[in-house]
Image 1 (cartoon, rainbow over the protein chains, first blue to last red):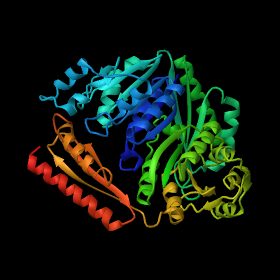
Image 2 (image 1 turned 60 degrees about the horizontal axis):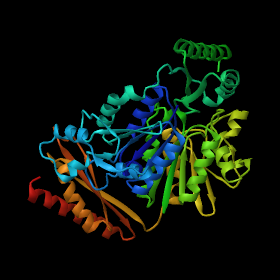
Image 3 (image 1 turned 180 degrees about the horizontal axis):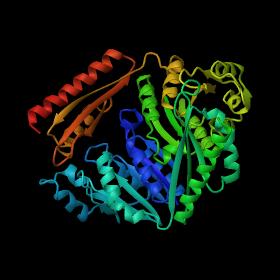
Image 4 (image 1 turned 120 degrees about the vertical axis):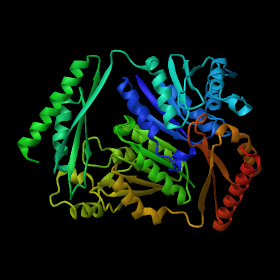
Length: 250
Length: 250
């Protein structure tokens, strides 16, 4: 199952905010059995939001977006989402009750956070006011989140059971080879991928400065229905790489 | 001038790596006079890389990509880039000399880091081996970087003079309103945007937990040819917001 992550917010594009939400969501989806195939970072702009959701709908099974769900004028994710799929925005009573539990007085701006695309399910936000939004369109699942990292984590944990893929497991593990240059180990990695590339993915991450303090982390990852097989296979191949590095004294 | 940032790497999509490169590049481009309109995060996959560069070429003036420039089998950014624009990959002598300065022995994998799209200019990498790549196609500028953050910073600083927009300035500043809820201040921000939206952009960032420890940062940003005007205008409007908050005792 494929997933796409959308991040909305000028502050991310301007580098004011490091996109930790993306890493959190990417990791959670990966370990929930999804293949995260793309990330799209866009401005607080209706047309861009609409286009990103349309693209994601056409290319993935699950779409998770963060940002633009608050009470201010430029929080327009739900409007852009609704435009993409011709949905009406309607006051959602469950969402309104969630907000009322947190705020005594409901102003126009606060009520806006309870105006959701028709047919949406509001998801409890234990760390903020705006509920998350869960909506299914033709078997494609959408989770729409605010931008504050603690709220993203809270809502994702509250909706995880709905999206987690049963009987599909992802596993990765890695070893570190100190004093080994990535460029020196590259042929070995290519050979191993030729042998095992249809079962696992092998990726190297340089640790130091190549020609001064070299070092490389070798990561092997895999996924499949048989949890034990996936884990043991990754460990077996990682062990083989380790032995080859030691034998050849890179 | 519009900019698009491309990040290549499964490790980013899986949330193994927080995309700090994106924030660094986004900030540098913004303060160099660019409007960063989009970010695209893709897998180590030729087709995805090719499509991302094609999209970016059609939608921006400057494209900066990071990741996939190393010596291993899945470092394929330059190949995908070349496919997008029908460029030959050729051994670049300047790039090879840069690599020879760092590594004594040139293997096939290491030479690969000097095989660049025809007409490229290699950019010195003071923190690693693979040079950055600078290439202009029909007035569209491309900077292609490795994925290691220190190398990204080094190469960007070494090429900055080539892309910096002269006589165009970006400025932002912000104030913090403690004990003020974002949802309470939203109507004021809307009013101010109605008044000044064609000159500046006003954005609020919630600081605490809305209904428990509220607080909001109000950021005003602007850009233009007249540096002094841009700065003074932002400060003036920020001051007006500050006064209104104090007057109305939010």
